[in-house]
Length: 541
Image (cartoon, rainbow, N blue to C red; front, side):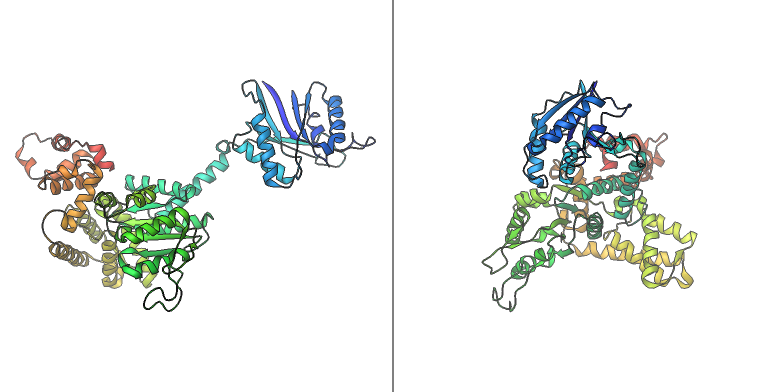
């Protein structure tokens, strides 16, 4: 394998007067003066104005390294400090160069040339337009030392640098913990989703769609994504949040896109609008499925072109914002029914993540319980903790099949706040837990009775529908109404259990007593198979 160095002539450092040029360090000549660096060929780039210096350098290389072939390349460039011109010239050189990586190993000398030339060479190496490693040379560490100086070959494969790789790993781990508010969550599907969101937050500025039931934490996660991007200097503007369910008519247009004075009755002054306010930052549109058709059309244009017309305006406004959307409604179904624009859905659905409800993350109730107690202590200045009996009781009730958790983490947060407030001496007792649990069950019962009719109208059935559509997107509509709640109950039991046997024991606790040799796992496996499902698919979601 031959070693080839590509480098720019140093119009200042490579000069050498006849009387002293052998006593001073000259970077290009020094390439041939290292006994442990054997170079087969040097491709020297130079401009017409520096032909005399190039002649001298080539001649001197012939003296110090007669075995090295030097090829000269006249490099046309008017201004070596013009980034566009320099990069274009070096890019053209790289495209025309006959690289043969099977026979030759390439180094690029990045010591000589202007800083712009050095940066452009590095970018071309990093993007593999030039398949090489950088070589950096330097003068001898002491005056009057060896004129060959020193050199180093830089390996840009950062994965080989253990300390750097570990630092990147620790940073990513810290950012994942940040997105989870420092909570040591245990649900594997949720943890995998957060890992992916951390990657997307670092690499992409495309829209993110967060779906899931009310209270699953969409707003909080959107805020954390923004803070993570701001920490990484991907955004510099504000986090602007709006609940689209609160927007109606002219007020919706005005709130989002702004208006000009006199655009409608009551518009006494100009208003910039939230899209303009989010310029350079992140706009979070919660419950985007509630937007009207006109607002959807204008939003699509604003996402595509970063420009839009305020209400009553003749001139466009501009805003370069990053978009996060939230929805607890089935946008795909709404689009199929004509209630949500398909082209807008396609634009905001580039990165989509479904946040599971609390009933699908029973293993995360305990760490979230501790987190909520700490939050209450910070807000109220009052420290409260469960005694052992009370904690075991709460976790038993909270992870039972009867736990509806309709409000998800909002229910948990409110429940912890109430129990901590009632904890005299800072101890939450079993009696306080029973009282709170009765309150939660009553609230859930009222919500169920307040919804109308059978089918997908009730809150419970909406949750069931979302759960089953995730697993059976093409078959859900063909499921009998009788089968839907039963299958949803089975799916939840599976996701709450560590094994298929544990799930079977939970589901068949009564009927198994009548069997001499009960095989709950086999019975559950056959039930799932009747719907084209298996344990692993149901468990992972």
